[in-house]
Structures are given as structure tokens and as C-alpha cells.
Image (cartoon, rainbow, N blue to C red; front, top):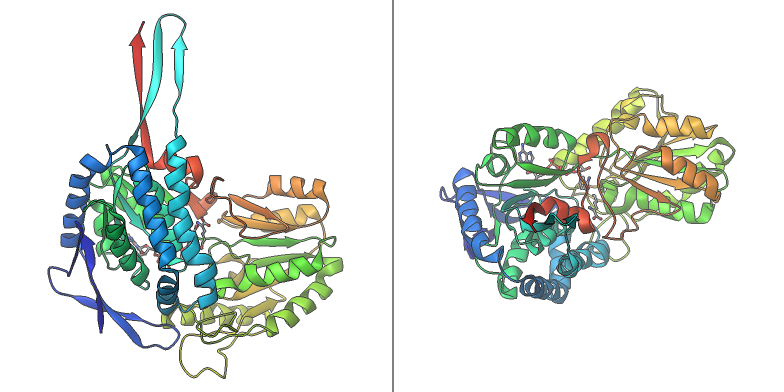
Amino acid sequence: MDKLLHFINGEFVPSENGRFFENINPATGEVLSLVAEGGRAEVDRAVRAARAAFKTWGRMPVAKRSQILNRLADLIEQHLDELARLETLDTGKPLSLSKSLDIPRAAYNFRFFADYVKGLGTEAYATDDIALNYAVRHPVGVAGLISPWNLPLLLLTWKVAPCLAAGNTCVMKPAELTPTTATKLAELAKEAGLPDGVLNLVHGFGPDSAGAALVEHPDVNLISLTGETTTGKAVMAAAAPTLKRLSFELGGKNPNIVFADADLDDCIETTIRSSFANQGEVCLCGSRIYVERPLYDEFVSRLAARTRQLVVGDPFDPKTDVGALISEEHLLRVEGFIERAVRDGARILVGGKRPSHLSRGYYLEPTIIVDVAPHCEIVEQEVFGPVVTVQPFDTEDEVVAMANDTHYGLSATIWTTNLKRAHRVAAQIEAGVIWVNTWFLRDLRTPFGGMKQSGIGREGGMHSFEFYTELSNVCIKL
Ligand code: NAD
Ligand code: 6OD
């Protein structure tokens, strides 16, 4: 049985107490590997290594840091097949998705920030002929990077790449359900020539475990967390005594708004993706679909027909569209939402049950729910599975109000061929990321993050560097 260890100061090490936990393959329920279970002791060792490495990494010429990170991007690309296989084993997502999205984006995250950092500038002001002011940008120090299980390497490297490019060092705490590609990343980072201690990895759980120890550690300067909104609240409280800098990318319950003038072919195909890609386990999924009434019946019948064609099954089969959910516990949670929705009077139009042809693994048929009552749980809570609701609307004002009637504010999609309406509605939607006639089309320079309880701060391009650096102003009397 494979054993996954922590990576501290350039070496793979077990926990001091020798404890391991099981890593399960969600497509089969079988144990994939044993993972070292870290706690305070391992976090403390990792933070000390990161602090020591910060002295040199933070002062290394930017071009040299950038070269090492580009080499790491090369290595990720060279290991595409292996990394994609490992990501699929851990998550249950289709191999085609790991190969086309997760791993290429992980490599690109490093390439993008390694290049972007070379152009970073600051401000300078002449105060008449009295003084010259200029700002100097510094890395912040040691970062704790805590990531979720849904896009494991993509979202971890979305943090690691700008963090290291800016000259910080880090301790990564990947989700306990998906520890494997983070471990491989540590191995590749060493091969790329990253100095010991710059990137450290501690495996383990969140509350009362490695995650909490990292958040509470007095020598960690910043925490970047992607996870549930409830986790963000706990982390914020735990980080208060040491006043850490925080960046949160949290949950979403994103509206997908379809006006009657939408290009329906494009809209249906994209809505299939925005509803069920990665088993609906993407924070950006448009799980609340609102359709203008004249189009409602046609939209629902076409979406239902297309959903019934989706192939659910073995993530390694190239024909598979929808793989397994991350865990048995999560499958039961998603099924609980469906059961309660039906109890509240909603109707399951498609799916709603485990596929009968699969005897093991945590699979669920892609599910469309209609006839939902306003304010019922299924339209208010994040399900994070292959489950969408569809509701009709009559006016623009009504749908804007419905879309904003949530404490989340991560993303939204608007489907219309009326340009004026697209601008008008986009301006009123309370979400950090808004797509018009598309979904999950990314440009890494743009601000990414959530409003309301979907997050704090923005990442991407300069926004990431605002978080991972700080400024001091130098004022010289002339
Ligand atoms: P989670 O909040 O359960 O866990 C995320 C990470 O936080 C894990 O590494 C976990 O161990 C750690 N953690 C949990 N409690 C902690 C604590 N008290 N202290 C320190 N660390 C702690 O989330 P998840 O189930 O892994 O991921 C799914 C959630 O993430 C969904 O809500 C989804 O919307 C959200 N998400 C958001 C984005 C975004 O960009 N906004 C992206 C992906 C996922
Ligand atoms: O594309 C990104 O940069 C990003 N952070 C995506 C998040 C997806 C959430 O599951």
C-alpha cells in the first residue's frame, strides 16, 4: 500500500506519532493509499522550515525565482498523464477532465504568475520640489495555503504559484480527501530546483488538526483558504488572535439566467457543463437556473433530454461524462437535499437516484428538479453535486431579485442576445464573476472571487500580488 508523507524542508517525512489515515477511491470505495496524519508538531516543523527559507527565497532575484517556477510548470506538463491519473483516482472525476482542465491549468498557473511577477511595479510621487516618495513591494512571509478537494491541483497551484512568485514561502494543507497530486507537486518542486523549505506540505484534517494548527500558528503571516463558507467563518475567528492577512474563496449558489432571446443550442450545451461538469462539484456551477417563461417549456424539455444522454460511470472510460462524487458521506448529503426538496413539494424531472448499473462507488444520476417553492432549501443552500433547479420568471426585475436573494455572491451566467440587457442585468447581479453567453471562461489577469458570504478578497493577476505582497513607502527629502 502506498504511503503519502508530509514534505518538510525538502524531505518526505512521516508524522511524529506515526499516524496515517486512509485515502479512498470514490469510484470504487477501495483504499488507494495511507496518508500521514499531521497535527501541531508537523505544522510547527514546516513553518520553521518555511521561515528559515524565506530569508533567501524572498531576496532571490525575481528572474531566478521565475525561472524555477517555469521549470516546475514544464515538469507538470511532462507528468500530465501521471498527474491526471492520480487526480482522477483521488476525486472520481473523468480522466478526460483531469487531462484537459485540472493539470494543464496547474502548469499554466505557474507559468502565468512566473511571468506576471516580472512586470510588477509600484507607485512614485514627487511632492513638489520637497520630497520624492516611492513604494517598495515586499513578500509578506510564510503563507498557509488550505485547499479543497474538488479541483485539487488546480486550486492549490492557484495559491502556490503567486505566493512563491512574490517571494513568500509556504505550508500547503491540501484537502484530506485528495492528498495525492499535492504530494507529487512537492516531488516535482524539488526536481525543479526549489530550495528546501520554500514549499512544505502537511497532510491532515481541518478542524482541531493540521488546518487549525496552521491558521493558529503565530509565525504564519497569511492564510489563503478555498472551501466552504462555514470553514471561512471558523478560520477567520481562529486567525483573529494572530491578526493574519486572509484571502477566502468560499461557497456559491450561482444563478444561471436564461432570457427568451438566448441562443438556445449554445445555452443548452453550456448549461449541461455548468450544471454537471465535475459532477457539479465546482463552486462556479450554475445550480439555480431561471428561464424566461415563453422559453421555459422548450428549455426544460431540451435540457432534460440532453441530461438523460449523459454517461455516468467509470471515470477512466473515455465515454464517461459524469464520474463519482467525492465520498460516501458527500453522496448521502446530496441525496438528503434531494429527499427534502421532494418533501417540500418539488418534482424530480430527471435523475435523483444512484445509477442502477453501477454496483459500487459513490455515483448519482445528474438531477433536474422543478416546481420548487420559493425559499425552499434546495434553492438556497449549496448542494455541491450534480443537482440543479429550474424555475420560470416573467420580468427582468423579478429575475434580478431572485438571483440576488441569497447570502452567496460568487458567480452568475446570463443568456441573452440583447447587448443592452446583458450590460443592464450584469450591473445589478451581486456576484464577483459574471459570464454572459458562456461559463468558466477564464483569463487569469481578471479579478476572481466572491461577494457577500462567497469570499473575501480577489485573486488573479495583480489582485493575487496585492495579497501576497506588502508595500513600504520611502520618502526622501530633496
Ligand atoms: P471545506 O471547507 O470542508 O475544506 C476546505 C479545506 O479547509 C480542507 O483542506 C479542509 O481540511 C480545511 N479545513 C476545514 N475546516 C478547517 C478549519 N476549521 N481550519 C482550517 N482548515 C480547515 O471545503 P471542501 O468540502 O473541501 O470543498 C468544497 C467547498 O469549497 C464548497 O463549499 C465550494 O463551493 C468551495 N469552493 C469554493 C471555491 C471558490 O473559488 N470560491 C472553489 C472551490 C471550492
Ligand atoms: O479558475 C479559477 O481560477 C478558480 N479559482 C476556479 C474555481 C473553481 C471552483 O470550484
